[in-house]
Image 1 (cartoon, rainbow, N blue to C red):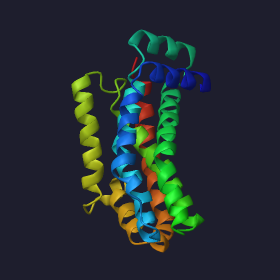
Image 2: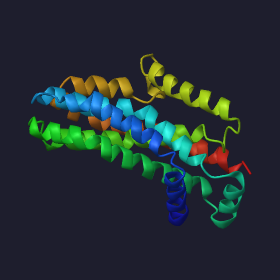
Image 3: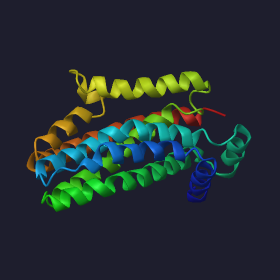
Length: 224
């Protein structure tokens, strides 16, 4: 399974589709992050929350693009060679997303440390991005060609899923959504509020990812 995941990541990179989210990451770095928090620990903590929010749609888009890179014939061969094909695909997409996350987090982590935010805030920011990337990965997987063969419908489903994740987090049904508003509010309330709220936000993200990921694997298992 790891070999198949590595093969899918390599194919995604060779296809040059990886350049698309990379350009978005560089744009985020140049337009937002490089402005700096000005030595303010509260702004530095807020930036770590902003990164996860900015990157969430990028991570979902990257997961969908990576899973759609393989031609249909190659996907069929992969399914014969490695039975848990869907798991390998999610692993490959998550690996690509963590790579993008490491790139975009380099600057805000340095800023947070230089602003005196503390190791706890930095660890919370890194943990938040890892879990948000996982949630975005399974959301993107649910809109891949394996589940939605029509490319146009798949793209609309991706956009709709990201928008729904945000809008639901503003409603009384926020427990059904990715807790984006919760982590943004906590991060901008300051380092103490961010680290204090992180365990609950992390649990929410883990449970959400587990439910959506299980739904994806069940749906993918029934597909040819």
